[in-house]
Length: 228
Image (cartoon, rainbow, N blue to C red; front, side, top):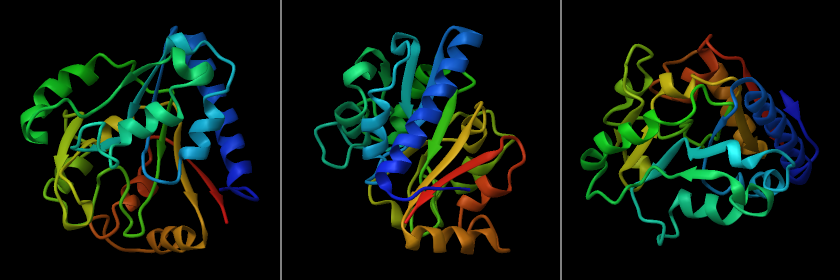
């Protein structure tokens, strides 16, 4: 685990490490994909990353998951990414949101599968967050499509999700799609989140705390960044 002194130090360190991964992918494949999480935690990281010196015109940014709301909603993760990340040097990046205007995630899923199929896989980096209930991406305890989302044998890149703890209906990359990455990151801050992580590291079903599916998978090493 990378234990940083505070949020600013974590944001700067994670931004530098993410930029290095993007540069490496561009050098190897000519393009780089980055999947990020929304919520309150990543805004400082987005700001620091937006200033990193690299060929952003070769980078495609998307979201790990999204609430099924338009960007005019204060709950939109896409609006956060546009405001906090797609600016400064990173304004040259291409951004692919997950919400596509369909009435429901189920109605929009097929078109979204076609959209994300054109993303540059493997991702250079996937940056996950974690909720107090142990969810990550839109893998929520009790989610109606949780088993589908966590099935590493599923060919689906995109899964819809509804759960009591999710608020709005959601759309999310599947676990298999998120693990198709050069680098996998978990970004958490605060003593409370560390306690949740420690609980998740104990024995118990992934369905109870879906972050366990990330912690237990063997496909990609997990890099954890934490600060008090």
